[in-house]
Length: 217
Image (cartoon, rainbow, N blue to C red; front, side):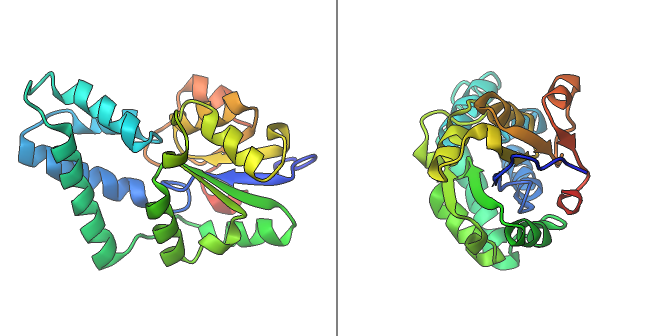
């Protein structure tokens, strides 16, 4: 059982924590890589999990230009993102197991809930609204409102500031190494619910708890 003594707020990541966006994103990246005849897409995908669009574009360009010196990262990224958007509009995005129940329980117990997502605000608001989750959150801190994305601590510092609570009295709920590093370095306690990436020993050592699903919080 997690010791909630002194904790006033939970700050959630969205992708791979609340919404099953990351498996869909990886599928779209694989299709785009196949079309461009690019190798190693899974490797670079894992590097990008938790990053903002700007940092993702930088990582992709550095990775794929080694295979194709004429690689146009903007064209490739827009193609993959359009595949994602078409699937989202046609099939929707599934909730991660226990997501709604977890938010409901925490809210009912009096915890303040905030969001810290590297995704752009427009997409965050759209996806959370469609999933019926947006009203649980006091504030949304998104990738296009920070200069440095995860693993930099900026987004978690801003999220804590947005609800007026010291980071040491907040818990971050994350799924990726970049997210864990961001939250830990901002001074939050971290609960890790792994999705696409299994944590190594370093990441494990930074977490207060590692759980199998949101139901266990």
